[in-house]
Length: 77
Image: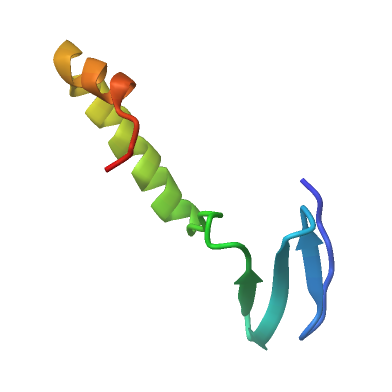
């Protein structure tokens, strides 16, 4: 893990297209702003973990027919 120190209103850049800025420091909490393309999903870690767990559970209980349909799904219209 890379650990960086930043002060209020300072930023870091990730992958040339994501900017993370320290917006507010209040006690033991900081507020950050993330400027990223809309195609980049951003989740709090606890929500991301819930999504992954739910998806894994759904896949483990899916029937072979459903799995086949998902494999063939193009996502178009």
